[in-house]
Amino acid sequence: MTMKMGFAMSRYQLVLLGVLKLILIWMFDLSLAQQTKWSAPAIISHRSLGQIESCSNLALGPDQSVHISWIAKANRADPREKDSLYFMTIRDGNLLAPGSVFPCLKIMNYLESPWVVVDRDTVCHVFVVAKNLPGPNGFFDYEVNELQSIISSELPFYNVWGFDSIWFNRDTIAAKDIAASLTKYLMIYVAWEDFNRIWVTGKRRYEWSWSSRVTCPFPDFIPPKGSSRAPHLFAGRHDTLFLAFIGHTSAEVPSNNKGFWHFVHFTKKSLSANEWLEPALVYRDTAGVAQQPFIIVDQQRVRHIIWLHWPRSPQMPAQAKLFYSYSLDDHGWSSPQNIAEIGGQFGSHQIGIDQQGTLHVYWLQYQPQRGKPAGIYAAYGREDQWSSPNLVAQQSDSTKYDQIRVVIDARDRLHLIEKINCYPAKGEPFCQISYRWRDLHPTAVHAVLNAPAHETEDRLQAFCYPNPFNESVTLHFVAKNEYRLSVSICNVNGQRVKTLIDDVMVNKETQCVWDGRNERGEALPSGLYFFFATGYSAEQRLLRSTGKLMLIK
Image (cartoon, rainbow, N blue to C red):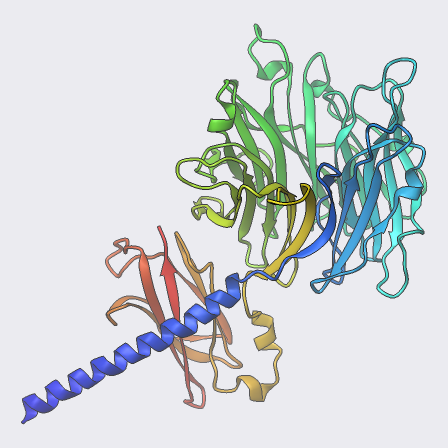
C-alpha cells in the first residue's frame, strides 16, 4: 500500500513538474519576445537612389531624445544645385517632422561627414564639412562648419540655425571624418582629418570664435614623418577627453618602407591640461590596414576600442575582421579580439554601452560568408567575454543595407538607424533612412525600487542579462526589504545543477553570476535551464521568483 501510494505521488509530482515546465517556458518565451522585439520601422527620409548621402551619428538629448542629421545629394549634372543638410529629433519613439538647415550653407556646393552633439541646455550642434567646386588653382575650398539651434517640441526651430565657420582652407586636398564630443562643463571639442593629419579645436559653448584654437597636436604624426587620420572623440564622465585614431610615426615602421601605415593609436587630454598625452600604440600590424576606430569609455574608466582590420592583399574583402581591444589604463592594451568571427567585407560598425556595463557592437556584413547571409549583425560582451555574432536583419536582393547608426540611452533602450538601398521588382530604385528601437532589458530595476509599497510587497523581482547568454549571465534580484535568499539552477529534467546562493541575508537589491557550470566546475551543454529563487523576509513572508535561462555556445 505504501509503495503504491509512493508511486502514485511520484507520478503525480512528475505531471505537476511537466505542467510547471510548460508554463515557465511559455512565460519566458513571452518575456524574451518582449525583450528582443523591435519596434515597427519608421521612415525618416525617402528619395531616389543615390540622393541620400551619409548619416550623422545618433546624439542623445538630456531628456533621452535622439537626434540625427543627414545629407541629401544634389543633381551633379546641374552645377547650380547644392547639397542639402537635414535634421530630425526622435522623442519617445515618435519622429518629429524633419527640417532642412540648408539655408545656412548656400555658399557651398557639396556637404560631407555630418556630426551631431546635443548639450544639457537642449542646444543642438551640427558639424559638417562643406566644399565648393574647384577654383582656378584646381583645389576645392573646404570649410568645417558648426550650426546651432535650440531644440523645442513646441516651436519650429529648423529655420533658426546659427552658423559659424570653424576652419577654412583654400589649398587643402581633403577635409573629412569629423568627430565631436561635449563635456559636462559644456566644452565642445571637434576633430577632423585633412590630408593625413588630424586637427583639433575646442571652445566653451557660449564663446564665439573657434579659429584661434585650431591646432595639429601630434607633430610626429604629420607627413612626411608620419600620418594621422580617422579621429574619433569621446568625452568621459571624469573631465577627460579621449581620442582614437589611425596613423603612424617614422619610428613605428621599418626604415625601408615608405607610404602611409594604418596603426591604431590612443590619447587623452584633461580639460585642465594644455597638452594631449603622448599617443599610445594600441595595435600594430605591418601586414594589415586598420580603419575606422571607435572608442568608448565606461563608468569604471575602462577604455574600449573597435576597428576594422584588412590584410594588405587582393583578398582584403574576404578576410576582413572586426577587432576589439580594451585598457585599464592609458598604455597597456589587450591583444585584439576578432569579435565578428565571420570574415567577409565589413562596414558601418557601431558600439554602445548599457547601464550594466555590457557593450553592444553592431556592424554591416555586405557579403555572405561561410554560410552566413549578408545583413546587420550584433554581438555583446566586454573585455575577454563576447557572444557569437547574431543576425539582426538579413539582406535580400531587393534590400541592401548601406549604413547603420546605434545609440543606447539611459533607459537601456537601443536606437537603430538604417540607410537602405531598395530595388523593387516594379518601379524605380530608391533609398531610405528608417528608424527602430528595442528595450535591452524589458523591465527597469529602478521601477521596482521606486514603485509604491503595495505593488511590490511580498514580491521578488528578477532580471537576467544577457539572456540568451554565452559565457555568463547576471541574475539581479530586487525586493522592498532585506531578506534571506537562496538561488539554484536546474536543468529541464528538474535536476539541480548549481547552487548560486544558499540561505544568505541580503539587501533589498543584490545580484549573482552563473558561468554555465555545475557544482563540479564542469561546463554544461547548450540548452534550456531554470533558476529558482526563494527568499524569506524579516516577517517570514515567502518571496519567490523563477525564470528561464538559455545557454548558447
